[in-house]
Each structure stands twice: as C-alpha cells, then as structure tokens.
Image 1 (spheres, rainbow, N blue to C red):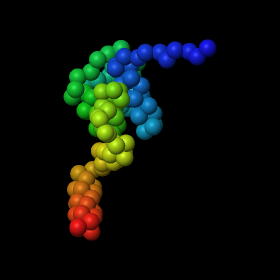
Image 2 (image 1 turned 60 degrees about the vertical axis):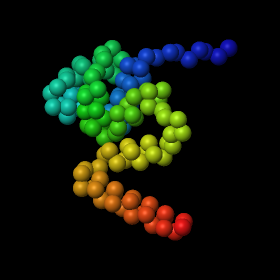
Image 3 (image 1 turned 90 degrees about the vertical axis):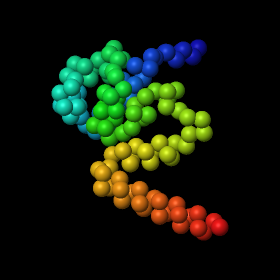
Image 4 (image 1 turned 30 degrees about the horizontal axis):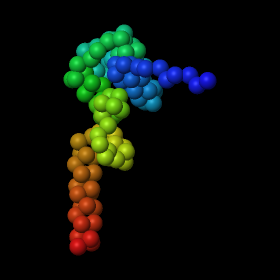
Length: 123
C-alpha cells in the first residue's frame, strides 16, 4: 500500500526552500540572520524554516536577496507557477538575481543584442 503524501502548509514549504537554499550556500542560520542586518535572529530563521513563523513580504524579498535567488523560488510551487511557465526562465531569473548591478547591466545588454540579432535573422 502506498503511503499518502503528507500535506504541508505554504509556510512549511517556503521554510523547506529557505533551508535548502541556505544549505546550498553553506550558511548557518546565524550567518543568514547576520546577513539580513539584524532584522531577525537565528531563532527566527529556524522558525521560518520549520514553518512556525509567518514572514512579511519584505522579509521574503530580503531572504531571496541574501540567498541569491528570487522570491518565486522560495515560495511554494503552487504560489509561483504561472500558466505556460518555462523552467528555463526560472533558471535565468535565479542566475540573474545573483549578479551584481554591473554584471546585470552587461548580461541585459548582451541578451538584448542576441535577441535583436535573432529577430533580424528570422525576417
């Protein structure tokens, strides 16, 4: 007999994603709290990761910034999935979010140049 998949709240799913990304970056909860500028403690990070504490939208954006990802990547799939969403765009968005401002400008200019060239060839 197959075991039923355990239902998890949006808070728990978001927490799991925060924890997974933090671990990918080899950060402790204390380091993450410090990177957030003291607005939260390591205990609060633990509560977020366990789905026991709700965060505001600004905190979600701040966490995404520190974790070099996007808020969509931290939110549960059912909250961030868009009809016709292309996973390649999600990957590009994640990579773009991790760049500094100069690199973002360069990447944007390069991509626009590539797209304009592609459009011209298709005519």
